[in-house]
Each structure stands twice: as structure tokens, then as C-alpha cells.
Image 1 (cartoon, rainbow, N blue to C red):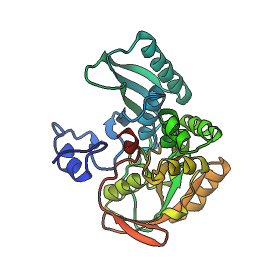
Image 2 (image 1 turned 180 degrees about the horizontal axis):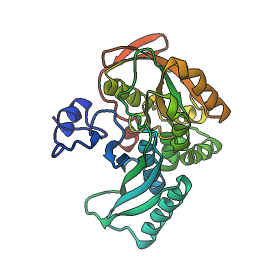
Image 3 (image 1 turned 135 degrees about the horizontal axis):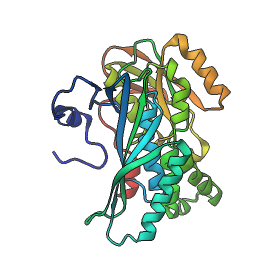
Image 4 (image 1 turned 30 degrees about the vertical axis):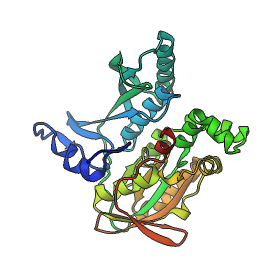
Length: 331
């Protein structure tokens, strides 16, 4: 079986990646598992939470994206990220000036979200066409840690923030000519580019952490992949109405222009949460008070790992991993 671009199929990951985890350690509370955003380790009187992610689908702002996207996966555990480790793989021809620009980008992002870079590795790597950054984010807490398997039947499903914003911004930066040929105005392209600065979910996640049963941040594969992974992680059936998820007008224009499904597009800056019904009014109130867009889009309805999606009054079942739409453009 040849693997395609993006994440391998979840069945492959479940069979292979989750199987080979080294020795047993009783202090590992949550190790590799489908839909789980970060590892959780008992450390003293608290918990260490760590996550690693690569940036492979962008050429601009890769330092900014690396910092934010790795940090997001710690934040949806309900934990503030504090430290970062970075690996920079650079193609031949990279100059010292190029490296400094990437590091400036990293530094700005780290200062913006309040994390410290504590180490890493940098090299020029033969055979790669563009820079690749791999970031590890770490946080520590003595409080509650949220897992992706916490959803319960009766919970409401809420999408918070702008879906597809990260992907639309990358398209505006890396495929600007394609948008111009499709007739997208310069004004829309410039507005789409600015969405790159709204990819953090840290404050959103920490605002509601005390009221959710699970949280997950949509990255590769977009909001649909995130919902599917939550369903698998929790072993629950999610019923979702995609028509109830509000689309940002800029994202809608950009994705229509290049024939891309915004529900399957890189969506850092948004998050998916399951919320017990008795906490829903509280969460809605918090989000409104902080001017954070959200959509109550579904419910957890059963104890079978399944994602049922309704769109234009037609229902379908998501039965496997979703390949992110942005790979269509790189092809």
C-alpha cells in the first residue's frame, strides 16, 4: 500500500504508529492515539503536556506557523504552552539571510504567545524542495488536562473561530497568481493574507477549558478531519450539520476561486469542542463576551465511533481520513 500526501489513513496509523511505543511507563497518562493532540505525562504533582508538528504545506511564514500550530495542540489540552524545541531542515541554496528571516518569524510568534525557545537543531538537508520546520511545544499544569476521548452522548458540538482561515491565507501567499487568474480582487487577496496572523487558539481554548468534555484543533484535513478524529478518539457518534457552520466571507471567496472545500482545509485558529448541555449557555456567553465567532453545529448521539454529516439536506458518513484540500494546489 503506497501512502499518499498528508496524514496516512487512520487505520494505518492505528495499526502501526500506536503499536510501537517503546517500554511501558506508568507515568504516561496519554500516549499516541488517533485524535489525541498531545502526550500527557505525570510529573511530580502535575502533568507535562507535549506535542510535535511539522510545517510542510507552506513556504511563507513557516516560522510563525510552526510556533503557533504546535502550541495550539498543547492549549486544547487546557494547558498554556511554555517551551518550544525546533528542528529546521533547509534546502540547498538557503542563505544565512534566509535562515535569519525564519528565526525572526519564530521569535515574533513566540513572543506573541508567550513561549520560550529552549533548543533544537538546524541543518541543510539534501533532497528537499523547501524549508521544513518541526516544532515541539511543551506545557505543564497542576490542574485538569483535557483529552480528546472525553465526549459523552448528549454533548453539544461547537466549532469555534474561523475555519479554513489558515489554508485561505496560505493560498493567498503561495498561490496569489492562481487567485488573480480566477478573478479574485486584490482587496480580497490582501485580506486573506492577513488571516495568517489569526492561527492561535490558545486564548480561545483557555477561556472555555473548564466547561468542555473534549477539545481538538483542526489542522490538516480541516474541521471535518478534526470532527472525525474526535469521534474516533471518544468512540462516539457525532451528528453534524455543516450548513450551520458559518463561513468567513474571505475564506468562501478564496476557496471557491480555486475549487477547494473549506471544510477540508487547514484550519488552525479554530477549534472543535464537545460541551455538556448544562454548560452550553455558559460557553456561549463567554464566546459572545469575547467577540469570538462560533457555531453550535451538532450533537454526540451514540456510542459507535462514527461521523454523520449533513449538507444541503443530504446525509453522509465519513468513513476514513480526509486528505487536506491544499495538496490539490501543490500537485
